[in-house]
Length: 192
Ligand code: GAR
Image (cartoon, rainbow, N blue to C red; front, side, top):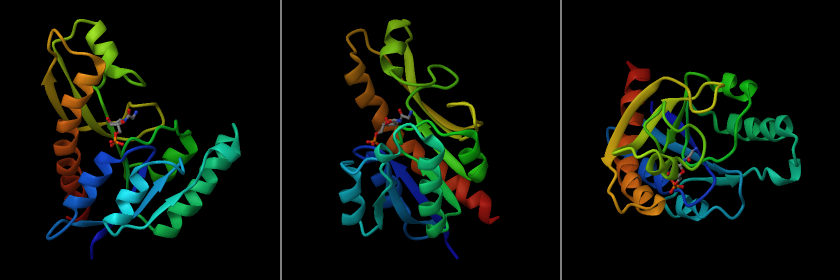
């Protein structure tokens, strides 16, 4: 039996698309739900076009009540019965309670070479620091932001004329390779 994967997004969902596209054939997992906290996330329609159920738990009506938002998120996720949750450009900070509910089974992709540049504006910060390398990391999610055990990383050079945008584009190409590879290995490890 295949493992069930839910993918959480907030935006365009290019990483989500790559994860969905690669969960075929002898892959040990299958996508069962794409869930967004934003009704206007471009990834929702992409998921439906790929034949994956897509739904929204809008954070806005909960206005500041993070626990209530996460309770709604949990209720929707539990209906999908996921074995693994992949955060793929999901831009909400999660409380310890939510993270602990899924701990050991929730992955995130972050656009930096962790432990460098947790949080936002990773590419601008790498350029400002004069770094020569940037990259992306897939890690297990723990209550501390962008802090869990690292499962895989990929790096790219930073060029002298890079802008945060040009660097983000170069890193994203690597994200699309890294996340599917790590998810496959992680899922295979759960089925051993
Ligand atoms: C990706 O670059 C991902 O690493 C980043 O958001 C982008 C989403 O793009 N995630 C974070 O910054 C998480 N803190 P996508 O919607 O096209 O996959």
